[in-house]
Image 1 (cartoon, one colour):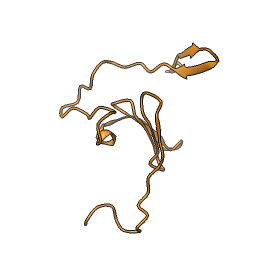
Image 2: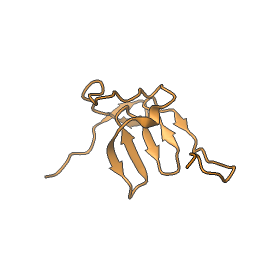
Image 3: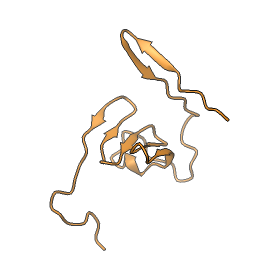
Image 4: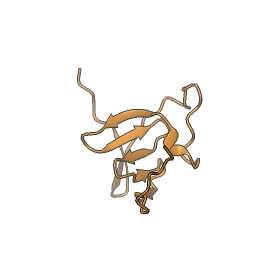
Length: 90
């Protein structure tokens, strides 16, 4: 079965994809909104590891390098653990 490409919404000379949503999160324990500090804890709804990104339930796109694009178009730079230590205690 073929899937159609997402439609686009053009304003001026800039075209942006139109994201189709099915309303608020329906997961049991609700996913955090894109504006929450823990927004990356939302469930993955589309994963493209061959391209290095995933779409979360709250509309955030996360990249393998830890960069992010929020639903409003704001880009968050990748963050790295520069101390060379694990991010979590074992």
